[in-house]
Length: 389
Image (cartoon, rainbow, N blue to C red; front, side):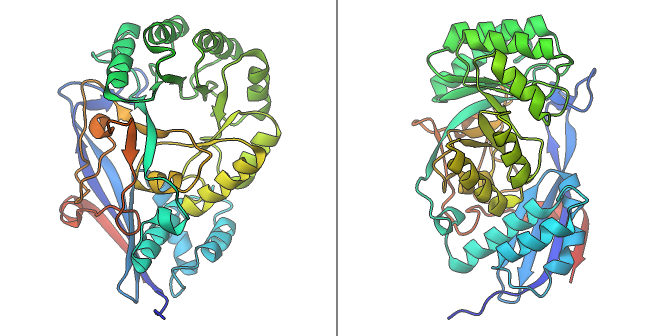
């Protein structure tokens, strides 16, 4: 019998990656949009959990606010059995109850990666996975004024391009500065071109000032039988009453819960009848452990869970559950066909061209997360390192 791996240290490396043709929107600068000729530097955070058995759990996350919570978690990690993720989850949720459980997801993902390497199996197999190909929808970058996604017509052109590539769904992310007539026209143009040929979604990213705006756009979605309508209100997607009321007035199913954290709040949203599909987020909702709990809870209500964003952890988790429809491929843009991210050593990408002929993305089959990180690139581009022993 193998000795259990005991955690000896936790390492956080902040490094930077250059992103080409991307800059803050001039009117709403907390959104990044396609901007030809302008490059920006983006922080990334590599997490490594080392053990006395020489097995290391790894992951990379882009959200610095998540990583900020990890130092508070190290006292319940160091010296502990790295395979006891449920014990970590229990104590971590309590320890971070006043800081929105930040950091729990990233640590949990790294612990699952460690377990997969320890048992020499991808995570989805440890979870009892049943599929290795994931149907995908093309999730667009936020609309811009610089070409590619600058007009309703260009959105329709791109939707048709994605359909021809094999994508089974297409999601609109409209302009940061909201123009309701333009958004409705975008829905109409995309609907005229591809409705009935692929599933359609829209995500205003919590932009609408009024309930009336949300209803108007929702009724436009109804006309084209949209698959879901996501996060319309400026409440940040957290008002159970408002979303329940919206559900009563439109036919298009709502997808909510991206911006709430954890199992209990999601279940409360379901019980309040404030959503149709349930949004989960690996990093917000307690990692793979928390996301599997959420998927099982949704299954008990007969509902589907749709995971936010894409990545190795999302693929491994989705491969292990049946009540989920789509992998979110993106963010994608017709003039920015991003290939492999530079911090992966093994071939892996979530760019536009990652789709297979069957309209699916593959689940990495290596141990743990199934991918290999390029630590030469990460260390060459590191800005700072913190280690806890």
